[in-house]
Amino acid sequence: MKLAQGADSIFFDQIGGKICLCFNKEHKHGLRPDDELFYRRENLAKLRKLPGKDIATGIECTADATAAFVDYIHGCELGNYVRCTEYDAADTLFPEMFRRTFPEVIMTNRLLHDCRKHWKEDLNFAFVFGNRFDVAVYRSRADIEQIPEYAQHVGKLLTLKKQYAEFLYDRQAKFVCDDELSLPDGGIYAEYKNGGKKMFAFPTGRKKTSPLTFSAIPSP
Ligand SMILES: [Zn+2]
Image (cartoon, rainbow, N blue to C red; front, side, top):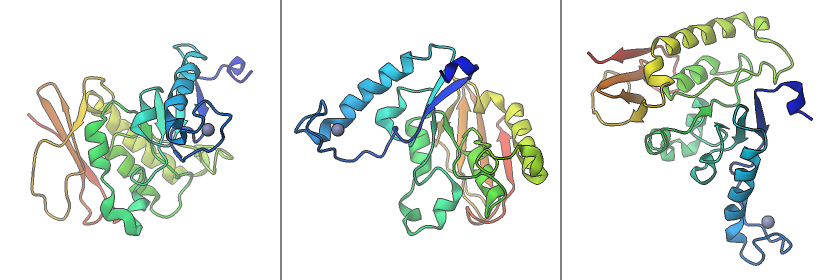
């Protein structure tokens, strides 16, 4: 019924992650709750086939076991947005490692619906990590014209993305961590490669949460 409204995508909340032991014996996994994910992957494969190849299928939550079955992931876990770096666990988050290991996974940014605290840093973080922007202003209760400052910044980032599309949208492009460079006041957050070309994207702020600008430098 929802697809009859001409949707470009169908989205299933939460089921990409939240992997907990399930003790419902009626389920296929029976007395092996640790096998739940095996059957969930079967379900995802079936769900992916339902809308047909021209309609994107998305899920929420990032896990390598489920990522292969969908077109995009609405990221949810720590590492999907810059504010997570304010938490105690920040030192154990390595979004670079996930992007390096699974560069083909298409993810969106997270929990940014309007101009709340760190909104600009969140958008920049998403840009640097090659995430698509989840623009759902006031949880889709308003449109983007109602927060022009946000609209302007997203517009700026989208223009930059277009400019560097060969690194950010090309299927051949990959997030890599090949080079070690020393930069003043800040580390490299992203390095992209496409064939013989490379691009580095990094914030110039000292911390991930400081107001930042960034630079994208295509190698010669
Ligand atoms: Zn179960």
